[in-house]
Length: 274
Image (cartoon, rainbow, N blue to C red; front, side):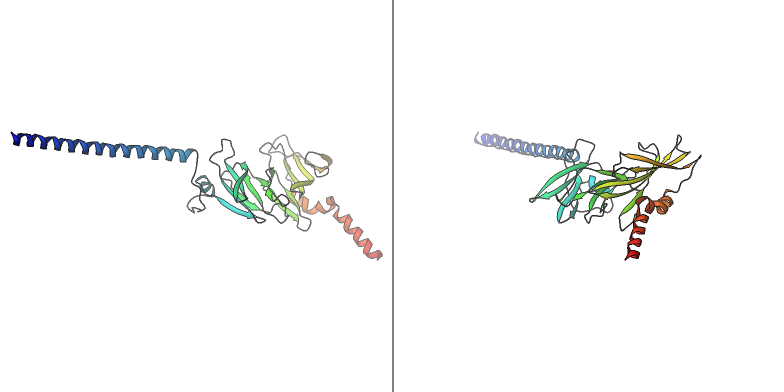
């Protein structure tokens, strides 16, 4: 009888151990499932609402791919620190943002849309300070640096990529607009930059009823550098399917149009009188 009791107790003990091991194994399985579930949610969250930002550039990816994958482009202007990064919190069309470090903290200045056209940092208005420029549809979208407020201004200046400096001393340029993206006619403008904005002098406008047949070339003068205030000067040529060399026109006539020739004659006359 005593042996029977010992045998039954032994069986009960074994069953208890087995049950305990099963519970332990099940708990481990539940823990693993819970961890997998958490990791899955975290990965989904990272993919949709946040990024792990980093400073390492992956040379196997394009510039924009790096930005979209969390790379931060840091740069300095006038001893001020800025950074460009993908804005995972933005719900608008503007998918990136520029931040400036102020009092040891990064503060967002503005959002902007960037695509595969890319961007650069360059002194567009030649005032001695670097500006931030993005490229889109053959245009420069420039965010000028203001040395007085020591920040990048959020008012964008849109000008064509196709531009040439014709007078380095006076910093006079000419550009060229295609008849696309809302422009009715092909055009070219003579201009400079003042106070971080373009200041326009003259415009050549190719008049046409058909983009393949230029019929007339008109010259206009801007009043006080204002793009929206022009005065007709003359019709340079009329015909059908005109081929007009606007580059050659500016090079031959810009000094006369700007009054440089008359100014030089006046200087020569003063020297002769002396």
